[in-house]
Amino acid sequence: MATKPEPGVNKAPGPNQKKFNFADIFLPNRVVSQSTMLGISVLWILSILLIWSANPVKTIPKPAEVFHEFGNLWGTMGLGQELLTSLSLNFRALVASSLICLGLSYLTVIPFFRPLVIALSKGRFLSLVGFSFVFSILIGGGETMKMILLVIGMTVFLLTSMATVVAEIPKADFDHARTLRMSEWKVVWEVVVLGTLDQMFEVIRQNAAIGWMMLTMVEGIVRSGGGVGVLLLDEHKHMEMGAVFAIQIIILIVGLTQDYVIGALRRLVCPYASLTLERR
Image (tube, rainbow, N blue to C red; front, top):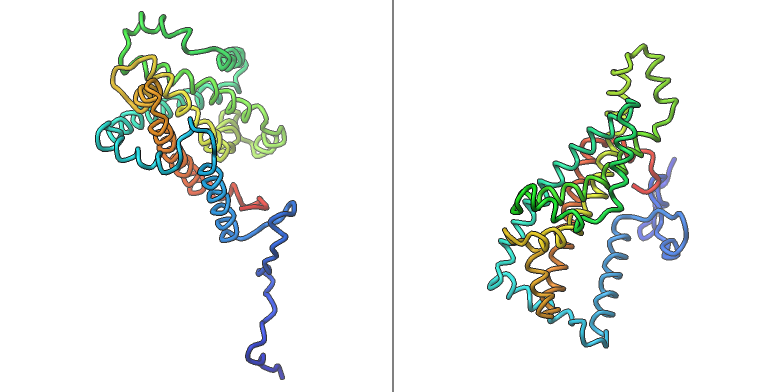
């Protein structure tokens, strides 16, 4: 007959339970719990704030100065409205560039379009500033010009990443679909479109940050309509570094939120994508 464990005696961990070992966080290929990762993240954040507070460089504002500027930016500088303007522009540019890139990337299954996609992807080495004068003549500036500049800047990077994903689909995936007697267009739908759906979300998530990096430049070229980029450049011009850091933190928080939302959408639409990962 099985005996009951004595009071005060710890039960042995079950097969799905792992005993926490402090050394695991310093060893390679160790999987730790979410609570442990949260603790490590908090430790890093506190360490960064401590180093930032002790920084002796006078031109770099202290955390207290930066947080003090948040009130001024929201109350007197209209940061909220400028942020909404930039959010709208960045979201529309992300949607437009994603649709363009996906369409062109999937068209690389047709040999006729491959040279075109390769040529467009090389546009990532060009600067938008060099084309701003041409676009201002053709379009006339304003919100449309900002949208086009941002879409072009995001498209060349998105196109490069997504076209690579399509090009690296294993030949075995195509052969397997053909053994099921699928037509070639059916193979494209099942293997190229649906088969890379999880990678598509990941490519968009990783490249969406490029829009926020280019936003300051685009809104600086076309100042009409405002935006956080214009506000950031104005504060930088007057050497208000506390306000500059505060705006950068706001952009970082918004970008991280956007990154999380796209990642959550990927997990919702493609829950199978993480089943074979060691860290999930």
